[in-house]
Length: 276
Image (cartoon, rainbow, N blue to C red; front, side, top):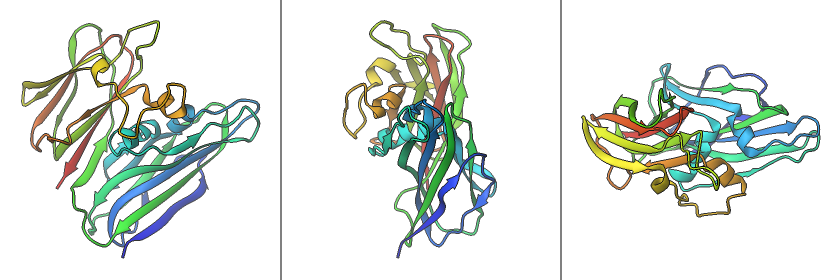
């Protein structure tokens, strides 16, 4: 029989949490995170502004993080990796009105074991927000997960120059690579075509196997397309996803990502591994 356990129940989030031990009555299938904050004064809080309140949420085994992800990157992973769009709404520009994001899913698939599992949520203040709260639920199953354990941590990269391919990521995979989420600060618009994460080369053990461009990759998630002005697209506009689920890149490869940048603004890279 599966079990669901509430770890935080609209708990105050005015400071980062400690590392908190998670009791494991079974295999940890996933966690679900909800974030809320109240507007301070006559200023609205958008969902895009609320999500970076979490920077990051970490899950650790024996003190070592195997999941480390910001709130906005997690929202994008929900859409592109899981085909799931959490419910969210902005506050109004009215004192004490709430902005919320509900049911962000954190895929884990961690079998039951004797090692120590902890979570930690780091807070970064959001402008015009106060009375911040978190809700966190852990969902357990009795049987072992069918797939491997998810591992995804965030790598920050700032190009030193624009216009040439420079190495942005160099990792040795401990599991099968099933996807790579990319955040680009600058994205194309009706009036400009500059893209921070403009072009990509993926190299496996030194061989170029995938060449991509932002413009070719930018597509709606499997959740379906929506108008540009909606809340989801206001967050997702800055992301693309390299999807390897149809043919995962096997564990043990040296994975290098080279990026030809359009400017020298920040890029975030979140490779997603599944480890048996």
